[in-house]
Structure formats: C-alpha cells, structure tokens
Image (cartoon, rainbow, N blue to C red; front, side):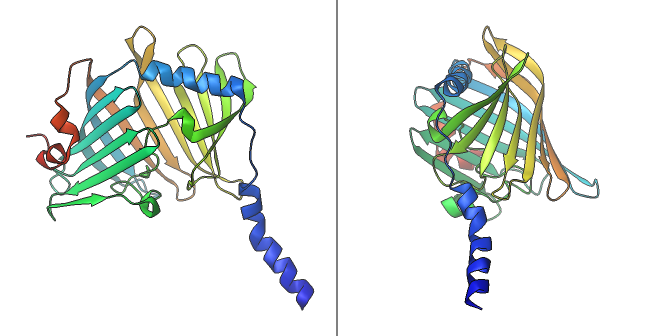
Length: 256
C-alpha cells in the first residue's frame, strides 16, 4: 500500500517536475527577440480600429467593434481598448500599463459603473469571452522570458521561451520573421506538453522603415475547438494621444 501511495504521488508530481525544468538563456535567441522589441518601440503613439469575431465550437459568432490606443516610450507602455459595439458591451474599456516589471490592468464595466483591477489570479481568465486571456494582452517584455533558439529557417527564427514569473503556460514557441522581425505565430504549451493554443498573424503592413504590423490575428483555442479573429484598420501612427486617455478618466469616458 505504501509503495502504491509513493507511485501515485510521483504521478501527480511529474507535471510539476517537468514545468520546473529551466532552460538556459541563449544570448543569440535573446538578441533576436530584443531586436523585435527594439523595432516595436520605434512607435510611440498608435491609434486604430479593431474588429473582433469570436467563434464557438459550433461556428456561432459574436462580433465586437473596438477602438485601440497605444503609447510606448522607454520602459513604459500603455494600451487602451474601448468597445464601441454591440450595445451590450458598448463603453466597456480595458487599460494596461507596463512600467518595468510592474503591470497594471483595469477593466471598466459601464453597466456596473465599476473599475475592476485584474488580479494575478485572474490573468488566465478569458478577456470579454474571447480566446485571449488577460495575460495574452500584457506586454511582451524580453526581460520577462528566458529564451532558446530552437531552429533557424530560411525565413524565420524559432524561439522557445519560458516566463520568469508565474504563468498559465509552461512554455511558448515564437516564430519570428527573420527579415521583418515580426511575430508570425506563437504556440502555447501546458505542463503535459500539449499545445493548448496557437496564435497566427498575417497580412503585414509596413508602418515605418523597420516596423511591420499584422492587420489580422487569429487565436485558436485547441482544447475547446474555438477561435477569435482580430482585424485592424484605419491605423494612425505617430499622432500624439492625450495623456488622459491612459488614465481612469479615459477608461470611464469611452469614445466620447
């Protein structure tokens, strides 16, 4: 009986032991991701319109129209998403502020007239019923990961990454265009070594000399046979956005 108890304990511990394995940070891999980040940081202000389409496992859809504001300078990045339609989500707004190692996320729910701070335990929750979680919508700071260069293909780099802080994922694999230094695809794995989600970006647009932006992304939830599509339009790059947009005032005000 004691032998059986030990075996059962080891079976339960195995996923934890796998997830605790550390990868050694690879300077070449880090350099690739830092170059991607350097190019993204060339854009200080960006405003755009977004369309979100959420597909459930039966192919039924829910559509969202969103206005997006982004600010990035030095170690500070801020993003604000404001839902314009349909009526049942209109005015809902989501603010993310990253400053160094500190990240703050706030969600405004107009029906309750309430601002909710997203806690660490809520990072793995679905964002507005989509297949993106609050963690997915956070900043991809190179300092938050350790990297390993898995493969160098003709047109892309393949990087294995693990977060240095607690994450809902055991590891991620980034596919990065080796000319544009833009993310083509991200694969998300759990501690059982199963790919649970996949993000695919497409329809790239050159917005600055060294900077490309995807006009479309699809996040696939492989466990639940769902997906969420995002499409961008009407991008405005480099036009200053008032500071109040990235405050609680801007969160509550919506698109008015």
